[in-house]
Length: 356
Image (tube, rainbow, N blue to C red; front, side, top):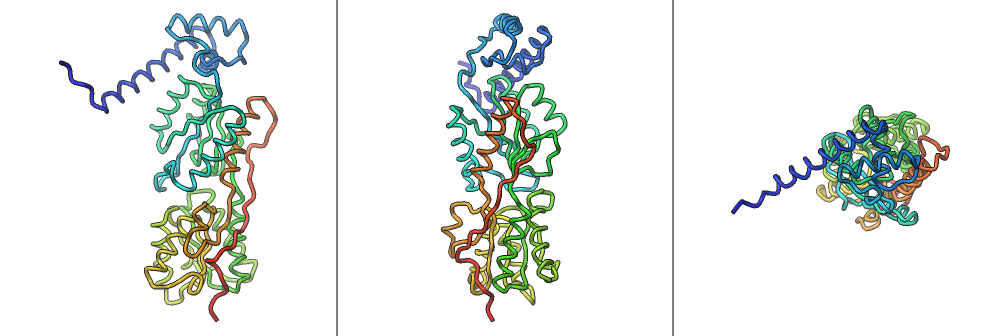
């Protein structure tokens, strides 16, 4: 009796089948004298193809064993979850990610669409997703942080898959539509709040400097300090991954300084939770010994001890806006290439005037 294939073998066989199907579609496109995206549209029952062309491609598809129009009789969009190099792995259960998924699903449901969520943390994972999406069909992709460039954009265009990037890792060019938030203003607002409370020795823990949003938040902090006539002590400026561990590590270092800060601005809520952990390690308290400001306002921020003062970025609204940009692109409506939604300060119990 032949042995049942192991899981890796099964996955390899599935991947091989996807690649074979993708090559078949490419061959059909070449025979019909059209693009792969046009073949994909006919396969998925899209109506934005000339009737004569649709009939010709449909005949070729049937000759190759496909059933035109049977794949997508309902709307599907893809949500791609990816992070910049050096960041902790993003999961669907991360509070930050959950807000983006929630916003996408709600906006898609209003339009009668379904959402397929796929982690894309490497070029290989992007390639696998694109092969699958080309075969099964999709109305477009929302790419979180991961900013397609060069050949990736060319392949998306060839497959007829529009893309909108949410919170792009680097500054997007005019060839990519994107949605972000007012990161610089958020960093400015966080530092101003602490300055208005009377703090003068304020530290900042930024994300990795390679991330566009991270650098903007630190720049906003610097601007608030300078406009208030306060010098920026570079010993109080650090960069870390967006994680609890990163915030804890940097806070421990900052609190070991001979002249330690009286307040810390963290580049995201996870880092701020790490700062609170470092305080407990050292038998210190917020806000009595140190004021702490986060960035994001994930739901658990209100449950921290003490509840976290933070900069709210409208994550669910960012995802919903990106989805609507995809839909507007289908209708050919003129639209901006980059949209920024406003941040706001949420004051809770982790900030207070410094001790006299």
